[in-house]
Length: 72
Image (tube, rainbow, N blue to C red):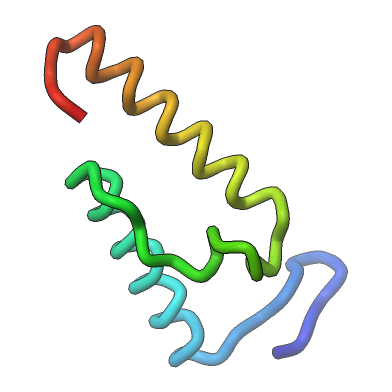
């Protein structure tokens, strides 16, 4: 993977597909109110801010569910 100051890291096509699949699985887990099996959120997460973003997502989904009267 190379990097450009203007655009950030670049990736090969297979890496891009893997990232998209990780994102898709994450979103499906949120939709289904299940715990995502995502290494980006665990204790060995590369980006230490990402688990905090995940927690905020869960809070927002819970608030939305409360307003709409739906479970999850």
